[in-house]
Length: 234
Ligand code: DC
Image (cartoon, rainbow, N blue to C red; front, top):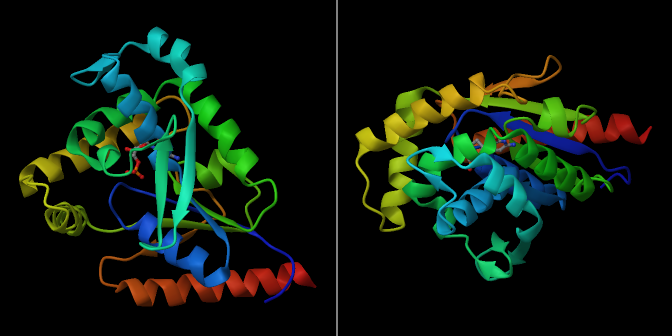
C-alpha cells in the first residue's frame, strides 16, 4: 500500500448505502471510517431523551446550550466488525437507528450551532488523513480538499426497499410507506436547509448504485481511491 494517505468523502441522499460503501472501502484500505450521520443521530437521541425536540420541532436554544454535555465517540467492535456509536459512554448504536430518531434528525441537524460543533469534531478526526467519512456535507464543508469525493444516489423506491429490509432484519416493524415518507422528507429538509445543505461538490464523482451490488460499487470506489493514492504518492 502506498504511504501517503488520502481523505475520502462520501455524500448523498438518505438510505442509498453510503455507510455500507464507506465502511467496506475503509476496511479494504485500512482507513478509519466515520459515519457522520450517527453523530447527528446521537445529538437527536439526546434531545429526544431530554424533551428538547418533539414532533419534528426542536427547542434550538436548549439544544445549543446542551452541546457541551453531549460527548460522541466511536469504537470498532472486532466481533461484529462494526463501528459502534457511544453517547456519553453509552452504546446507542441500535437506538439511534430507530424511526423516532430518523424522524427528528433532519430538523435537529439543520441547527447551525449543532452543525458547527459536529463539523469541528469531524475535521479533528480527519487531521491525519487515512479516513473515509460519509454524510451530506463532507465533500463540500467538512473536507472541501478531500482527494476523493463520491456523491451517491439511487432511486427513492430502491432506497425505501433497502431501508425496509435493513430494519426488518433487525426485527423493527415499520411499513414501507412510512419509510418512503421519511426518506422523502429527510431529502427535502437536507437539500433545502440554510446551513450547509446537501449538494453535490463540483469535483465529486457521481455513483448511482440503483443497479449495483455492494461488491460492484466497492470495486468501483476502490479503483478510484487507489488511482488517487498512487497519484498522491508521486
Ligand atoms: O446518514 P444518516 O441517514 O444516518 O443521517 C441522518 C441525518 O443526519 C440525515 O437525515 C441528515 C443528517 N446529516 C447531516 O445533516 N449531515 C451529515 N454530514 C450527515 C447526516
